[in-house]
Length: 560
Ligand code: SAH
Image (cartoon, rainbow, N blue to C red; front, side, top):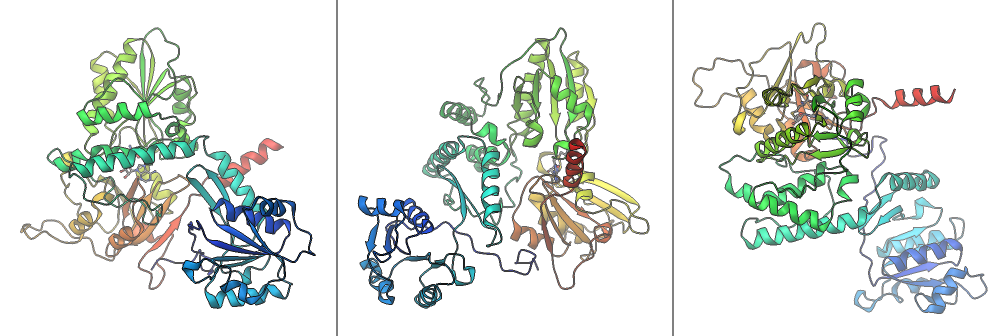
């Protein structure tokens, strides 16, 4: 089973955002730390009561709060009865939270901590993690967005540095963008609900432990009318998942209105909020490059594609082209991101081809940027053909395909002497959503399934059992104990690998939730570098570290 701890054997703290509005918080002490706790309580809508004798020097912020009346002062030493008498009437006068700021060596600290625990009052004692039932986080806030960090008491300086670095990485105005997108989401949900299209509740919890539901990228077929009608909600989910943050924060109410109208009528409008930057210079004769951008990490671009990015007048990028690659695009360059989402692929494709053609006719340098390799499930050749027929033969640049690199970054060698001598790359989704024929079992084969995770259980079923109507039974079934792995967001910072067997992988994936894009690798090669741990049905590994060491080598070389 999945390891519930953080790998160090220590339990993981239960992180939560508490609503403490109108609560009573006791603060024992008058030091600068007590002042900081008092400010935090006030920010959280609680009423702080400071307990400290008049003889103690009071921090000026505390005095200020007391004189303004936002905090109360009990002018004496703490007494046990304070815990059950100073609180709100509605909770029988028990206080809601206690901060002891006297330090761990003060005799009152363990004493108060003990009674609080007995009374189930959350208690925090400064500098004494063992006396705390909770600790405060180092937080970054921007409007409705709050990010909390804890190093579990190992390094508060480091926590505050991490907070600053995370904060500086986020674009300005993210808070208001979250407000705006949240309002749209509610509006769409209400409209869809009023029209009887959505029966599900509007989820307001931020807990993403289950990620996207594993139906997130489910294919919408033409006949699936209900799904098509809730397409605006799906579109919103998709832009929240895929658009670069830099682009999300620049979205305006007018942009949203225009896009929603376009999706209502099922047509494009020329309002074109997908355009990120402005139009730049125009070259003599239009030319087009069709390039692959690799699996995600910007260092996995080829130099040819990088140069094409720097030289293009207009870039038409797939939805899956990751943000760090888009970040390499010069500000002056016009960028469009495909509005492709399940059920809308053909329309988005057509829109892009026409956009490319218009730019070429204006004499611009067009870069059609595709994810991974352009000729591997990327409709690359269709686009090549389209532009060639229009008189603009594209230059095609290869990209590192996710099919090979995702398995590599999950420590799965596609071939390995004595284990696997061949590789099969297939799709889990056929044309118009039809299920493709499952491959026959070859013990020495590594099979990589792209676009398969939204129908994982059906795929695994088809590999391991014959449907009742299949009387020919011409292929060999894959044994249920065949090793396999799901690799998601390969080469991105949030890469995740789930290692299991065909028997257990569906359960593991259901429990973990989906984190698109991802693929499935099946075959004995999955166990070459990671043999299964006894008794564990699956193992989940988080994060991508493949290129970090090289980066630091490079930095060291530059410093020399
Ligand atoms: N041309 C692309 C594949 C496009 S099809 C390539 O060569 O990689 C899209 C599928 O690629 C997704 O459904 C997923 O299965 C896979 N995929 C793309 N990027 C991925 C990544 N970073 N990690 C894991 N799978 C990825």
